[in-house]
Image (cartoon, rainbow, N blue to C red):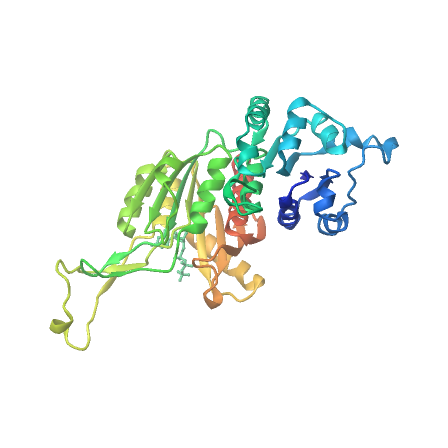
Length: 403
Ligand code: CTP
């Protein structure tokens, strides 16, 4: 995607570097358009080095290339960060006396503006009116973050974090290719009770499954999330998704999956399901003083939820595409691919996502690397944040749904 990043003349201009870096690392082409005043805060050389593109704020250089309209016409997305009060006033009035102003008037791409200024300036009636004007014209204006400002003062006026700006901006260009589809997604790790206070569990945090659910939701899907024992605060999932079912054990997860399977276009089994449960759960707490120095727990196999689902999809001729996950200690990509293909066949699912958990990687972390394979023979290797991996898995799925 070609993203134009406008940078205006405030102290937060240096933070544009983090935005450029993250966008280029995600594979986007970034063209930085600073205002003249922005270049008093950050050098063109820095912006060029990070964006790998020449940087020019001058409207009257290379006039023959008509760059003042070309950039705006070619951009897929425009971000202005930081945006000063003065920039907001000029943009709201349609003033186009520099390259950034021209680019903004010549574009049909979505525009996101991230203001940063002192609290008094943000709350001034002129700024309030300019922000309202821009928003009424379909420009997304982020609210500044609250915190320490340039001087001794603090309050609303800080530039939001680069991640926040980028995710809000990318939201504006997300395809709605899953509209009308229902995704049933399981996440987290099941717990199998031993007694009222003890259980057998696993290290899954649920982060990857929730990231997949969020990515699907952002692309217009109806999402039913079945969550087991999330490791940390994930926000209010019951308002975020169309349905959120909280479960503890594999048996509860299976009931929830079975109840929703028929209406789902896709089942994503990202949960780490305990393969075994305790045969006889003690109703009272097992007391150390009563068991002595060893204890034997008899474990019995849990039903394989994914396998039961793929069998049911085949038997009842359901439309549901089934996606399984596998945690493997493969060590290298070739071995991981092979293990993924074996698991795809043994589970009978349409798509399998395998991740390498050697040396304790993945669990609870924010990054992941996976191989996605499909029954149709397609495969893809994805590495990066769990959000990026989620987006690529959803891309893969969206392609399967359109076949
Ligand atoms: N799964 C399930 N029900 C189970 C166990 C696993 O639905 N009782 C699902 C998981 O949600 C995941 C896939 O099956 O999608 C994982 O398969 P599994 O055979 O458990 O693979 P691994 O976890 O990689 O473990 P192993 O290879 O040791 O069997």
